Length: 50
View (cartoon, rainbow, N blue to C red):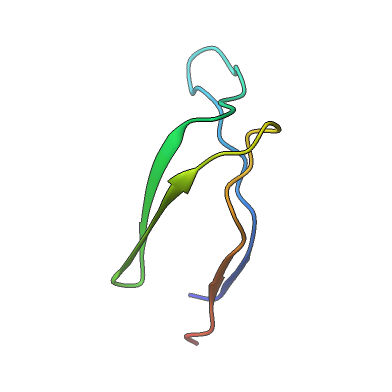
């Protein structure tokens, strides 16, 4: 999987944007952790595996 983007976090039930929330993303055997920004975006996630 190739990934080079920010993800925007939101509540699945309400659609509310999740600003300043801790997150943990699992993909391609890696784990990325952080806190969403004021606009509910994660930091940029880059994975160059094809």
